[in-house]
Length: 248
Image (tube, rainbow, N blue to C red; front, top):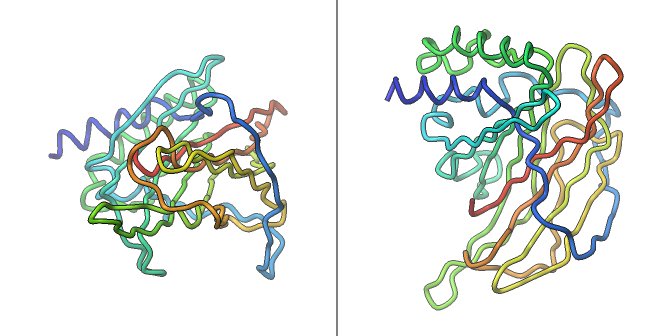
């Protein structure tokens, strides 16, 4: 198991993900997320809130990596068995994460940091040496969903998504939005996009369309895209995204 975990983590540092949309959307509607918190600052999440620092998440995570071109690298991490119940709300949850590195040098620095932390990760999954990813972008998405049964068959309904990010070394994150997608056998809907207020917190939650019905496993996509615009210290900007599917 230790060898498998080590290989998983070393692979993790080798790339980071844009999770670009698959296919074109039919149409979309937008609404601004209501923000009720008292503060108006967008505060990046603390490093100990990153799910990839949890060894139980990494131990059985599936990893998808690739080069995105122009010296940008990505990796997506999924573990459908991780934290099936949210302790705060009692709701069923599914969590996914993506890392994005914007240069070969940045990627190398991440790799060295991850290798140094690997030996202590199982015993100390939230060690301070873990999670320092240089100037990379970290995106995380948690889907909250309900299950019901019809004639003994499971039906699923996404209720909301909680999104968060972490940036470092002068990189900034703006223009956040969430797009819910549902192309399933029991319901095929137009995409619904919510633009997140610039004053909304980090993390923040976005409600799924309440009028979408429960669906079965059968279908193409059922989940949410988390989009943001990243500005590097050089002034270069890039739209980045994480797609989180409930079933994949």
